[in-house]
Amino acid sequence: MVPLTEAEAYSHVSGVCFKIGPPRLVGVEVEWFVHDDRCPGRPVRPELIHAALASLPLGGTDGTSLPSGSRLTLEPGGQVELSSPPATGLLACVDDTRRDLTALRAAFAAQGLRLTGTGTDPLARPRQMVLDHPRYLAMERFFDSAGPWGRIMMTGTASVQVCLDAGDADGPQAMARRWRLAHRLGPVLVAAFANSPLLDGRPTGHRSTRQTVWSRMDPTRTLAPGLDHGDPRQAWAQYVLDAEVLCLRRPDGLPWTAPPGLTFRDWIRGAGERPPTLADLDYHRTTLFPPVRPRGHLELRMIDAQPGDGWVVPAAFVTALLDDPVAADAALAALEPLEPAERADGPRPPRSEAWRRAATLAVADPELRRAALSCFAAADAALGRLPGAGRLRTAVAEFAERYPARGRCPADDQLDALRSGTRRTPPEEAAP
Image 1 (cartoon, helix red, strand yellow):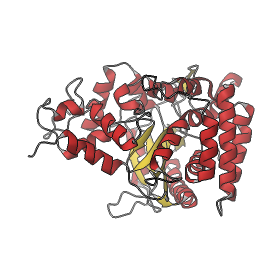
Image 2 (cartoon, helix red, strand yellow; image 1 turned 90 degrees about the vertical axis):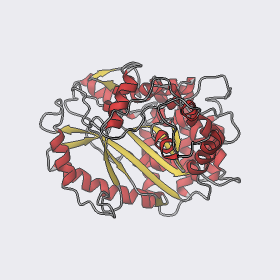
Image 3 (cartoon, rainbow, N blue to C red; image 1 turned 60 degrees about the vertical axis):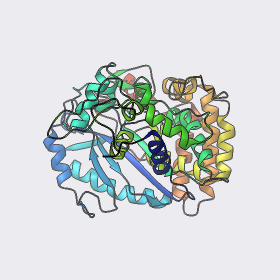
Image 4 (cartoon, one colour; image 1 turned 180 degrees about the horizontal axis):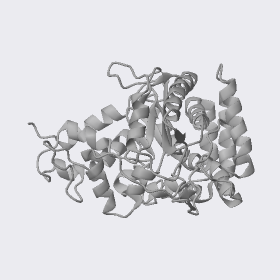
């Protein structure tokens, strides 16, 4: 085995994590909590979830994808994640994902189960690990050493993730510009779509408790890379090497627990029980969870799960702002006041001030509300320029009027229902 060098690691990460080319593809990953309609407050028996999954019309080359190509995975706490295939454009992505979600909901309803879209599980029910894969056991041990946040993240949070191409080498769709906008947009995405005010059945004081949980976890894998670096590829490669190793794959049923404090750079330099390989480096990248994760494309990870087809609005909103150069210019101008100084020594997202205010106050914060409304206006104009996007434009405009225009976010609906005593089950699934 030829030892992996730091130079090879830098080159590999820079090459595979940012695929250069004109933006074209769009994807989403939507996560759902599973609740029993007959008794929502009790844990769902894993065999019911597996029965629902087994009844789905899966196909594809490996027999694991839904009719439109979406893939399903089960998260450690029993959350179900649907990952759409990369689609050519926003409209195709939404159509494909809706078709596959219809099949998914029907399969779970047949088992008496409901898919609930909230950023944290709103009910006071026991959180349990339903998967015993060595990866998740190692994650559990790694995160438990630093408090409850990792276990809450694994078993009690859910999100909407929007995936877009990294961008061109230069020009109006330059990768570096899209990388910067994706991070600058983060506080507005957290605030506008905040939908996790409850944990264990009680208000937490945060509109996006999910985002607050992420901000309190291991900083080597949850903070954004240094945004002052001119080349995102170099910044990301440095981030990957400086992150602690979460798990070390071993054969024959041995635990995957990694030595405490071991970074991947340390591992390359001789620490650890064996030299690392490129496969180890690629696996290590899958255990990093910054707000924007480059995986060839850009994966925006800061949005709370939404009820019903509510995932459509953040998908359309983000795509419109990043893929329309005029809208991108308007958004960057609107977002500038939120984080005016990206200092190398300052707190990085999601621990910086604007991100913390977004998680706590959402668009009740006047500055975040102004930025959000400007971004929604820019997205509306961009969707107006996109042929065939009339229904998506209407959905985004209705969301803007219902929530940020009134200083509200979806979390406020949950809090209102709790105060009025009308919340008996998880929030109803409702399309925007």
